[in-house]
Length: 401
Ligand SMILES: Nc1ncnc2c1ncn2[C@@H]1O[C@H](COP(=O)(O)OP(=O)(O)OP(=O)(O)O)[C@@H](O)[C@H]1O
Ligand SMILES: [Mg+2]
Image (cartoon, rainbow, N blue to C red; front, side, top):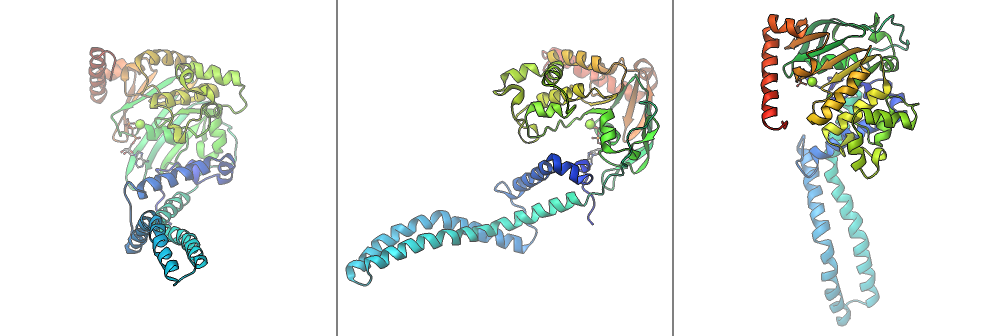
């Protein structure tokens, strides 16, 4: 068994296959893998593992060339030469017509078959990628429903490594019910990883994460999902309509509820511009939309879901200042009374958080309020100063980043 590839969401691939296949999510993920394989093995640049692959590719390319260059010439040569044979009496007109038809009908499938040789390296690569995805260990889950006694989240001495390298080293943190906890730290310090572990994208390597006292591995993924709204930094959308993408947050919601959530998340402005409005297709991974638009759709999904625990990873990172204000107002409304974890680069947006946690190199080095951290934590002071500098630079540049 190869090393599990954690760049692929194991929730979609390794566990509950039936469920996901039923919903078409697994199919979507596999399609993405195949398309990525196409990009890396297709015309842009070809990736060959060994001599056989290279040989197949060369044969395929030659066949392609023959197919496109020589085949159209067959008629050019055959008609004058054949006519000459018929005039000489070497051949009859019926023979000429027969040979002409045969050459056309045999040539095409033959060259097509040869050109298929070039696909073998791509097929090998695709099969390897799919096998790698399927080799992911299933997540540790249980069929139990949520039986926690509150919505307090606890990370207890959590360690985690994507491959060999550990990126979280014994993080302990409590998110109190009805409070907003902010996670800050330089890029790569492990903030998003911590959020992903909470929504059980991956299993921790050490320690525990509990919700209301119940270990998240002790409940089903569905039970955990029902209790957490997560707006990820990556803003992946499924290739269905934007309406359906929002509806995932609460499958039994009415159309009015979906539209209201979209409006709260400031989607109205760009939905009006789209030809099909909210019923426009998102494209693979949501590629029809900009980063900020995808983020607003993800936020609308979270608003619709209205779960007791909310995790927002850079939820307003791509939004222009005007929409950000409205969006923050919407966020302020939905997080009232919830257990909230907000990850933010711009520290100005979280100064009022009940608690700010500072991450550095996979460790939680301090946690306190803004004012206290400014006094006690050099790393926080450094982050704050650079955030202030970047904010004033933006003001000088008319709000543009
Ligand atoms: N899928 C992955 N596979 C391997 N390593 C990863 C993966 N995702 C993140 N990492 C690594 O884990 C570490 C923590 O990454 P993480 O995304 O949690 O940082 P972050 O604090 O959220 O950064 P940013 O502020 O840039 O979003 C980094 O060193 C990163 O390179
Ligand atoms: Mg991140």
